[in-house]
Amino acid sequence: MPAPETTVAPMISLRNVQKRFGDHFALHDISLDIGAGEFFSLLGPSGCGKTTLLRILAGIEQPTSGSLSIGGDAMAGVPANRRPTNMVFQSYAIFPHLNVEENIGYGLRNMSIPRTEAAARVAEALALVKLDGLGRRNADQLSGGQRQRVALARALVCRPKVLLLDEPLSALDKNLRQDMQSELRALQRAVGITFVFVTHDQEEALAMSDRIAVMNGGRIEQVGQPAEIYDQPATAFVASFVGTLNRLTARVTERGAGHLTVAGVPLHLPAAASGPGAEVTLAVRPETLRLGRDPECDLVLPARVVEVQFLGSIVRTRVDVGGDVISLDSFNRPGSPVPAIGSSAEVSLRSKDVIVTQAP
Amino acid sequence: MTFLNRFAGLRLYAVLFVIFIYGPVLLLPLFSLDTGLYPTFPLKGLTLQHYAEMAANTSMIEALKNSLTVAVIVSALSTTVSIPAALALSRYRLPGAAAVLGFMSLPLLIPSIVIAVALLIILLKFLGVALSLWTVGAGHVLICIPFCMSVLMSRLEGFDPSLEEASRDLGCTGWQTFWRLTLPLAMPGVISSLLMGFVVSFDEFVIAFFLSGTQTTLPIFLFSQLRFPDKLPGVLALGSLILAGSAVLVVLAELLRRRGAKSANPGDI
Ligand SMILES: Nc1ncnc2c1ncn2[C@@H]1O[C@H](COP(=O)(O)OP(=O)(O)O)[C@@H](O)[C@H]1O
Ligand SMILES: [Mg+2]
Image (cartoon, rainbow over all chains, first blue to last red; front, top):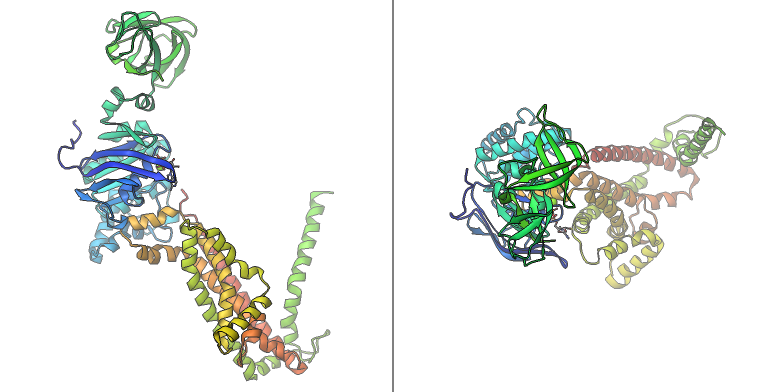
């Protein structure tokens, strides 16, 4: 399924946005378009500026320079309370002096909507987040999952053009988090609102998003669909942050650019453009490697088994290839032999699955 | 020494402590019910006569009214001016906020006689204002503000700042956010501040002594009555009533504080 392309006027458009706190740059030169109806994730490690970017979209924080438009309207000088965005805060920010209904109806009171219609919309929102019957509950009698739903309903009931979510699932336990991932995704499809979703969890971003922007140190490293981000990481950072990554050291031979050896095995990779003698770092995903000699693979490397981990349906084997320890995954099939630690083995892969990154 | 022994020792200490603090105060209602003219043991007999005398003492009732009026106005005024100041100091990183806070608590440290004399000079020499209950009230506002500020700030600082951001995000202006979110959440603090202002003003002697004109407040009136031994039982009766009133106030404040404490950690999950 192709992600919505942003050739039509984008819902959100950021141009050269910078944000400085004192002399620290939280955001460097962010330019980004997000399409209407997209589930768009901002993914990156803690402190990379995700929340700051979200707060700039919401109007809670002002950019130091650069411009921003939402739904085609420039947002310079438009305060948070007049933007077509609503936010689900990381702490959920449930108003403690109000019950669930009053929390959800909070924003509607500013919209001059008749009382009966407001009540109907609150009831609809309660049903949407599956909290029917809990309208009269006090805020302090809610579980973490329920607080998250109240925060979601409170924002959605205002029918924003863009919903901003700041790590809404990070406070939930693992099972609930996985349920909420699919529920949130289904909800987004149902309401058709553009979601900007912040997370530091790459699996979450890959599982939920139409497109992802990977951020690091206040910059966007790559924007793309989950499969692009995973299979064709644009930078070494993206390659290592998204998914598990194995690094292999290769050396360019006398024949020059593109001709390499790894653990003594020759290999041709046009992407490795360095001159003879240079060291190149190759990246390989665990799932592209096979233990043993595989006829579909054009590259077979000698290895020694270092460690075997059972991960349930998957067995992760760690092997030493020419001094680099790498992981490879295979399905745990009953009857398939488990490699012995210390034994020598062969690792097969296809040279087209190898990602070339420059030496760190 | 065993744990039990130490525990018994502690308990004895606690009992003595409570007697030391509350004993003298509790003598007041006791003697107010005695038929004798002088507060001595043994008690001579039980009577409510002093309470009747007190009610008949119009100048005492007048002083009580003055004190109540001043205390109510002072507590409302000092709380009202403290709310915006406490909000500003707890919300924004203002330049010089620490200095403002320091200056603000100065009236707590300066002896009230110094403040009283300084105010007297300013009022009489520079402003040329006649002394009245208004000047007493103005002096009381000055010394009440630090108390009100500290109560309010401790309440306001406990909030998750994203609550106010959420309110703005949901369409409220700053002013609407104040009325719909900040003030309701700060209400336990506002009520403590009102009580605090009331008690400080009602009880205050030195400033009232210097700054009052022909109308006196209750502490000044009571002090003047001590010269007349036959007035003493009436003073005791009034004192007992005030004691009962304060007890009710303290219990109310504590109940409110507990209700506030329950809702004070909104961000908890
Ligand atoms: N109000 C602020 N004042 C100063 N520095 C801030 C402020 N908000 C964020 N920062 C800094 O900006 C950087 C990015 O923060 P943030 O956007 O919260 O990161 P993330 O949400 O990705 O974890 C961090 O280094 C943080 O310390
Ligand atoms: Mg964050």
